[in-house]
Length: 270
Image (cartoon, rainbow, N blue to C red; front, side, top):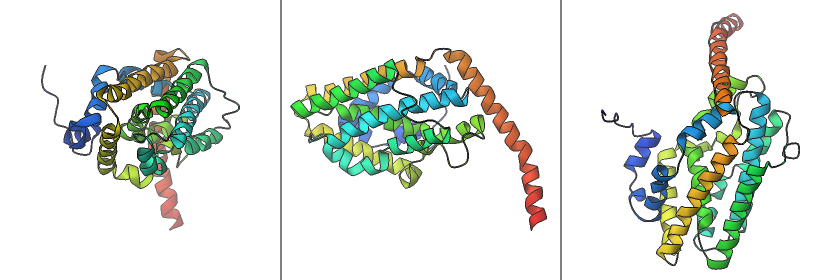
Protein backbone atom coordinates (compact mmCIF):
# COMPACT_ATOMS: atom_id res chain seq x y z
CA UNK A 1 0.00 0.00 0.00
CA UNK A 2 1.23 3.50 -0.78
CA UNK A 3 2.12 5.64 2.26
CA UNK A 4 -0.42 8.14 3.55
CA UNK A 5 0.22 11.74 2.44
CA UNK A 6 1.88 13.95 5.04
CA UNK A 7 -0.52 15.57 7.47
CA UNK A 8 -0.85 19.34 7.59
CA UNK A 9 0.27 20.86 10.87
CA UNK A 10 -3.22 22.04 11.87
CA UNK A 11 -5.08 18.89 10.85
CA UNK A 12 -6.13 16.45 13.55
CA UNK A 13 -3.55 13.92 12.36
CA UNK A 14 -0.89 16.62 12.15
CA UNK A 15 -1.63 17.77 15.71
CA UNK A 16 -1.35 14.20 17.01
CA UNK A 17 1.91 13.65 15.16
CA UNK A 18 3.50 16.95 16.19
CA UNK A 19 2.51 16.79 19.86
CA UNK A 20 5.30 16.39 22.37
CA UNK A 21 3.15 15.66 25.41
CA UNK A 22 1.35 12.69 23.83
CA UNK A 23 4.59 10.76 23.36
CA UNK A 24 4.92 9.99 27.07
CA UNK A 25 2.95 9.21 30.20
CA UNK A 26 -0.81 8.84 30.46
CA UNK A 27 -1.37 10.79 27.23
CA UNK A 28 0.52 8.17 25.27
CA UNK A 29 -1.57 5.45 26.90
CA UNK A 30 -4.79 7.30 26.09
CA UNK A 31 -3.86 7.76 22.44
CA UNK A 32 -3.14 4.03 22.15
CA UNK A 33 -6.89 3.49 22.44
CA UNK A 34 -7.43 5.17 19.07
CA UNK A 35 -5.93 2.04 17.49
CA UNK A 36 -7.25 -0.42 20.04
CA UNK A 37 -10.91 0.47 20.32
CA UNK A 38 -12.00 3.61 18.45
CA UNK A 39 -14.64 2.69 15.84
CA UNK A 40 -14.38 5.59 13.42
CA UNK A 41 -16.67 3.91 10.88
CA UNK A 42 -19.56 3.60 13.32
CA UNK A 43 -19.09 7.11 14.69
CA UNK A 44 -19.02 8.56 11.17
CA UNK A 45 -22.12 6.66 10.05
CA UNK A 46 -23.98 7.50 13.26
CA UNK A 47 -23.19 11.18 12.90
CA UNK A 48 -24.32 11.20 9.26
CA UNK A 49 -27.51 9.35 10.23
CA UNK A 50 -28.29 12.07 12.78
CA UNK A 51 -28.66 14.44 9.80
CA UNK A 52 -31.37 12.30 8.19
CA UNK A 53 -34.11 14.47 9.68
CA UNK A 54 -34.64 17.21 12.23
CA UNK A 55 -36.39 14.69 14.48
CA UNK A 56 -33.44 12.27 14.39
CA UNK A 57 -31.03 15.12 15.02
CA UNK A 58 -33.10 16.14 18.06
CA UNK A 59 -32.97 12.61 19.46
CA UNK A 60 -29.20 12.39 18.92
CA UNK A 61 -28.62 15.82 20.46
CA UNK A 62 -30.76 14.86 23.46
CA UNK A 63 -28.66 11.72 23.97
CA UNK A 64 -25.49 13.81 23.93
CA UNK A 65 -27.07 16.31 26.33
CA UNK A 66 -27.81 13.58 28.85
CA UNK A 67 -24.33 12.07 28.50
CA UNK A 68 -22.53 15.38 28.90
CA UNK A 69 -24.73 16.40 31.82
CA UNK A 70 -23.86 13.18 33.63
CA UNK A 71 -20.17 13.56 32.86
CA UNK A 72 -19.94 17.23 33.78
CA UNK A 73 -21.91 16.73 37.00
CA UNK A 74 -19.46 13.98 37.97
CA UNK A 75 -16.48 16.15 37.04
CA UNK A 76 -17.90 19.07 39.02
CA UNK A 77 -18.12 16.82 42.08
CA UNK A 78 -14.72 15.16 41.60
CA UNK A 79 -12.24 15.46 44.45
CA UNK A 80 -9.64 12.98 43.20
CA UNK A 81 -6.19 14.61 42.89
CA UNK A 82 -5.98 13.10 39.41
CA UNK A 83 -9.27 14.62 38.20
CA UNK A 84 -10.07 17.82 40.11
CA UNK A 85 -7.05 19.86 38.89
CA UNK A 86 -7.80 18.91 35.27
CA UNK A 87 -11.43 20.01 35.49
CA UNK A 88 -10.57 23.15 37.45
CA UNK A 89 -8.22 24.17 34.62
CA UNK A 90 -10.38 23.20 31.62
CA UNK A 91 -14.00 22.89 32.74
CA UNK A 92 -14.88 26.39 31.60
CA UNK A 93 -13.58 25.74 28.08
CA UNK A 94 -14.82 22.18 27.67
CA UNK A 95 -18.31 22.20 29.21
CA UNK A 96 -20.93 21.33 26.57
CA UNK A 97 -24.22 20.60 28.37
CA UNK A 98 -25.49 24.20 28.38
CA UNK A 99 -24.85 24.56 24.64
CA UNK A 100 -26.55 21.24 23.94
CA UNK A 101 -29.66 22.39 25.83
CA UNK A 102 -29.82 25.48 23.62
CA UNK A 103 -29.32 23.37 20.49
CA UNK A 104 -32.27 21.23 21.54
CA UNK A 105 -34.41 24.32 22.01
CA UNK A 106 -33.60 25.38 18.42
CA UNK A 107 -35.47 22.34 17.12
CA UNK A 108 -38.39 22.75 19.54
CA UNK A 109 -37.14 19.97 21.75
CA UNK A 110 -36.00 19.65 25.33
CA UNK A 111 -34.32 17.11 27.55
CA UNK A 112 -37.68 16.39 29.22
CA UNK A 113 -39.33 15.62 25.87
CA UNK A 114 -36.45 13.25 25.07
CA UNK A 115 -35.62 11.27 28.23
CA UNK A 116 -32.55 9.02 28.17
CA UNK A 117 -32.90 5.93 26.01
CA UNK A 118 -31.67 2.58 27.39
CA UNK A 119 -28.25 2.91 25.72
CA UNK A 120 -27.91 6.50 26.88
CA UNK A 121 -28.90 5.53 30.42
CA UNK A 122 -26.32 2.74 30.46
CA UNK A 123 -23.64 5.23 29.37
CA UNK A 124 -24.67 7.70 32.07
CA UNK A 125 -24.51 4.96 34.71
CA UNK A 126 -21.02 4.01 33.58
CA UNK A 127 -19.87 7.63 33.96
CA UNK A 128 -21.47 7.91 37.39
CA UNK A 129 -19.88 4.60 38.46
CA UNK A 130 -16.47 5.86 37.31
CA UNK A 131 -16.89 8.98 39.43
CA UNK A 132 -17.91 6.92 42.46
CA UNK A 133 -14.88 4.65 42.11
CA UNK A 134 -12.58 7.67 41.74
CA UNK A 135 -14.07 9.05 44.95
CA UNK A 136 -13.28 5.77 46.73
CA UNK A 137 -9.70 5.25 45.61
CA UNK A 138 -8.47 8.60 44.23
CA UNK A 139 -8.47 7.20 40.71
CA UNK A 140 -8.71 9.00 37.38
CA UNK A 141 -11.38 7.08 35.50
CA UNK A 142 -13.32 10.25 34.71
CA UNK A 143 -10.28 11.44 32.76
CA UNK A 144 -10.97 8.53 30.41
CA UNK A 145 -14.53 9.67 29.78
CA UNK A 146 -13.42 13.28 29.28
CA UNK A 147 -10.73 12.17 26.80
CA UNK A 148 -13.26 10.12 24.82
CA UNK A 149 -15.83 12.86 24.35
CA UNK A 150 -13.93 16.16 24.42
CA UNK A 151 -11.13 14.97 22.15
CA UNK A 152 -13.72 13.74 19.66
CA UNK A 153 -15.27 17.20 19.73
CA UNK A 154 -11.98 19.04 19.32
CA UNK A 155 -10.51 16.72 16.70
CA UNK A 156 -13.58 16.28 14.54
CA UNK A 157 -16.74 17.71 16.01
CA UNK A 158 -15.75 21.33 15.46
CA UNK A 159 -15.95 20.72 11.71
CA UNK A 160 -19.47 19.30 11.81
CA UNK A 161 -21.32 22.55 12.49
CA UNK A 162 -21.51 23.71 8.87
CA UNK A 163 -22.56 20.29 7.48
CA UNK A 164 -25.29 20.12 10.13
CA UNK A 165 -26.62 23.54 9.09
CA UNK A 166 -26.54 22.65 5.41
CA UNK A 167 -28.34 19.35 5.97
CA UNK A 168 -31.04 20.59 8.35
CA UNK A 169 -31.61 24.23 7.36
CA UNK A 170 -33.74 26.19 8.15
CA UNK A 171 -34.49 24.36 11.41
CA UNK A 172 -30.80 24.53 12.30
CA UNK A 173 -29.69 28.04 11.48
CA UNK A 174 -26.62 30.27 11.50
CA UNK A 175 -24.60 30.19 14.70
CA UNK A 176 -25.71 26.67 15.56
CA UNK A 177 -25.12 23.92 16.61
CA UNK A 178 -23.46 25.68 19.53
CA UNK A 179 -21.98 22.59 21.10
CA UNK A 180 -19.41 22.33 18.32
CA UNK A 181 -18.09 25.83 19.04
CA UNK A 182 -15.24 26.01 21.57
CA UNK A 183 -14.57 29.71 21.05
CA UNK A 184 -10.95 30.82 21.45
CA UNK A 185 -10.02 27.44 22.95
CA UNK A 186 -11.08 25.72 19.74
CA UNK A 187 -9.65 28.40 17.49
CA UNK A 188 -6.24 27.73 19.06
CA UNK A 189 -6.79 23.99 18.75
CA UNK A 190 -3.19 22.87 18.42
CA UNK A 191 -2.06 24.73 21.55
CA UNK A 192 -5.21 23.77 23.45
CA UNK A 193 -4.78 20.06 22.70
CA UNK A 194 -1.17 20.21 23.82
CA UNK A 195 -2.27 21.78 27.11
CA UNK A 196 -4.82 19.02 27.56
CA UNK A 197 -2.19 16.36 26.95
CA UNK A 198 0.06 18.01 29.54
CA UNK A 199 -2.81 17.98 32.03
CA UNK A 200 -3.50 14.30 31.35
CA UNK A 201 0.15 13.53 32.05
CA UNK A 202 -0.07 15.46 35.32
CA UNK A 203 -3.16 13.41 36.19
CA UNK A 204 -1.22 10.24 35.41
CA UNK A 205 1.61 11.37 37.68
CA UNK A 206 -0.92 11.93 40.48
CA UNK A 207 -2.15 8.35 40.26
CA UNK A 208 -0.66 5.86 42.68
CA UNK A 209 0.27 3.04 40.33
CA UNK A 210 0.48 1.72 36.80
CA UNK A 211 -2.70 -0.24 37.54
CA UNK A 212 -4.50 3.02 38.31
CA UNK A 213 -3.30 4.49 35.01
CA UNK A 214 -4.40 1.36 33.17
CA UNK A 215 -7.84 1.74 34.76
CA UNK A 216 -8.14 5.12 33.01
CA UNK A 217 -7.34 3.47 29.68
CA UNK A 218 -9.90 0.74 30.32
CA UNK A 219 -12.46 3.45 31.01
CA UNK A 220 -11.75 5.03 27.61
CA UNK A 221 -12.37 1.67 25.92
CA UNK A 222 -15.60 1.29 27.90
CA UNK A 223 -16.66 4.78 26.83
CA UNK A 224 -16.04 3.89 23.18
CA UNK A 225 -18.32 0.86 23.52
CA UNK A 226 -21.05 2.94 25.10
CA UNK A 227 -20.75 5.50 22.31
CA UNK A 228 -21.16 2.77 19.69
CA UNK A 229 -24.32 1.62 21.49
CA UNK A 230 -25.75 5.15 21.55
CA UNK A 231 -24.82 5.90 17.93
CA UNK A 232 -26.42 2.69 16.65
CA UNK A 233 -29.35 2.29 19.04
CA UNK A 234 -31.95 3.79 16.70
CA UNK A 235 -31.03 1.39 13.91
CA UNK A 236 -31.17 2.05 10.16
CA UNK A 237 -27.66 3.48 10.44
CA UNK A 238 -26.66 2.92 6.82
CA UNK A 239 -29.93 4.17 5.34
CA UNK A 240 -29.98 7.07 7.79
CA UNK A 241 -26.43 7.98 6.84
CA UNK A 242 -27.35 7.95 3.15
CA UNK A 243 -30.33 10.18 3.85
CA UNK A 244 -28.13 12.50 5.91
CA UNK A 245 -25.59 12.68 3.09
CA UNK A 246 -28.37 13.49 0.63
CA UNK A 247 -29.64 16.25 2.91
CA UNK A 248 -26.13 17.67 3.11
CA UNK A 249 -25.65 17.61 -0.66
CA UNK A 250 -29.03 19.26 -1.17
CA UNK A 251 -28.27 21.93 1.41
CA UNK A 252 -24.92 22.76 -0.20
CA UNK A 253 -26.60 23.01 -3.63
CA UNK A 254 -29.29 25.34 -2.29
CA UNK A 255 -26.68 27.53 -0.63
CA UNK A 256 -24.77 27.86 -3.91
CA UNK A 257 -27.95 28.83 -5.77
CA UNK A 258 -28.73 31.49 -3.19
CA UNK A 259 -25.29 33.10 -3.34
CA UNK A 260 -25.79 35.04 -6.63
CA UNK A 261 -29.20 36.25 -5.44
CA UNK A 262 -27.76 37.41 -2.13
CA UNK A 263 -24.96 39.22 -3.95
CA UNK A 264 -27.44 40.93 -6.28
CA UNK A 265 -29.59 42.08 -3.37
CA UNK A 266 -26.50 43.43 -1.64
CA UNK A 267 -25.49 45.41 -4.72
CA UNK A 268 -29.01 46.78 -5.13
CA UNK A 269 -29.04 47.95 -1.53
CA UNK A 270 -25.63 49.65 -1.83
